Length: 121
Image 1 (cartoon, one colour):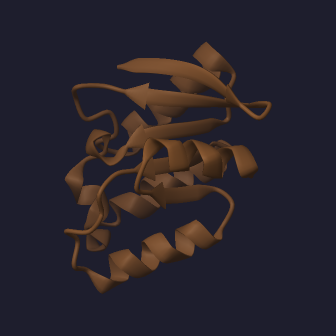
Image 2: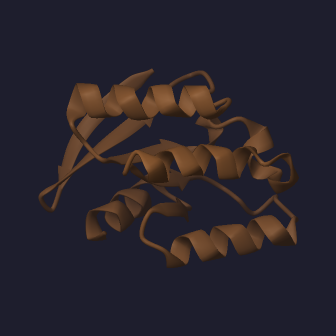
């Protein structure tokens, strides 16, 4: 896993990259949050959706809620970017829409858009 710290309009943001899934459960999400805070001091994370286990996007598993609750509890804002067009679940589409209306968790198409969203909050 690679953590790159960038500064966008005065806001520190950690951009995560990896060839492996980084978030597979609540413990790995917590590990990521703590690694980012310790290594960068940033309170915002950008990562591609491929670094999150696919079960996250099946809302009935409850994994998304558990993982995102860790982000909220530890005051870490996140933007997850990628192609969501192949998901047909209406609850997931509604979840993404509602998340994007808030101030803590965002789902975007591109890394650049993810960085912009986090820099504005």
